[in-house]
Amino acid sequence: MAHVYGLDAAGEARLSGAGARVRAVAAAHAADVDAKGRFPEEARAALVKEGLFGLCIDPALGGLGRGPGDFCAVVEDLATACGSSAMVYVMHVSAGAAILASKTVGDRDALARAMAKGEHLTTLAFSENGSRSQFWAPVSKLAPVGDDFSTSAKKSWVTSAASADSYVSSALAPDGSAPTLYLVRKGVAGSKISGGWQGLGLRGNDSAPVTLDGLKVAKGDLLCPVGQGVGPMLEVVLPWFAIGTAAMANGLCRAAIAATTTHLTEKGFEHTGTKLRDLPNLRARLAQMSVKTELSRSLLGRTVASMTNPTPETPLLVLEARLAALEAAVDVTDLGMKACGGAAFSKQLGLERVFRDARAGWVMAPTVDHLNDFIGRALLGMPLFG
Image (cartoon, rainbow, N blue to C red):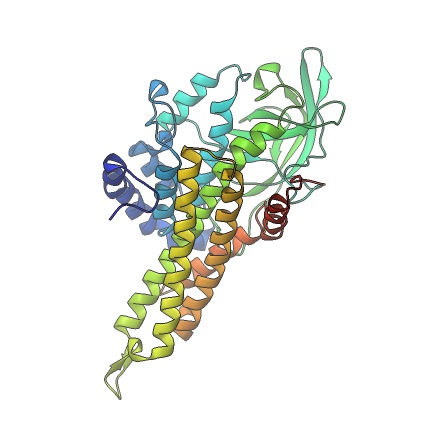
């Protein structure tokens, strides 16, 4: 049977080989990562070892040159083991896409080669305190300083904040007209982590607020011409982020199904000799979990195919795939908790961690409320923002 995300033979082999080895490492450390709220360094090292940091980078720059379908397959598989590891990887590839698409950043090819080797981890730093989850509307501005710029901002939550080697960030042009994307390098003066992360879920994604105070932005660190950030933000970063987080949500669904299936199959009633699977209401919940998951995966499969051969409906599919997956993850993990009963509230099944991780996507920009509005606007022929 063909893979739902359209993988070719090489992609299937990579998923069952390199992907499976990464998943095994991530699974072995997932509970500890969650319990301690620590960065999933073991999973990152495994991704590097298996060459998956360069999955979507041009082979001429040391990568594997794969597309959206392979990306989604790797993310989904990784998320079945550890949501935090998948989140770090999604942010890296999404931010990396902005770097790879840039025609203005001075050392793009060198950065791409470093990413492909696993020597450079990047991430996104869009959302700000002043505009909250409306990531497309920064309130910070660039101020000219000769041929360069400076900026100050309070970035609200940055995944991999302490671990990343760069942030793909945004600020308004000096005249306040439109966003500009720029690169923040690790260790530069004017950038500091200004808080910690004690979240409900995705506890190992190293998310933290970052304060930029008089940060120098060299001309060579601009990822686009001044004031022209909307294009790469919506046409490059958003699609990769949307399908990546959709794949992550689908992976969490699969993890919930697996945990529920095992529990219903193995546990039962000594006094009757029956299993939990013998109860029709529990079988029905498992059935609903599977149907919701496969519907979401199918829509994402159609979306990645459309991204490979774009049509006018591709942007709409990107938004719909993310919305469907986020809703599925919440519904499926909720059904899993109900099907497994009291055992699901303990750590032994791993289901309560998946349940918590699944809630993060609901409030992660663009939120479910934003997505519903964006999709409605698109269907009615209205501009996305307004």
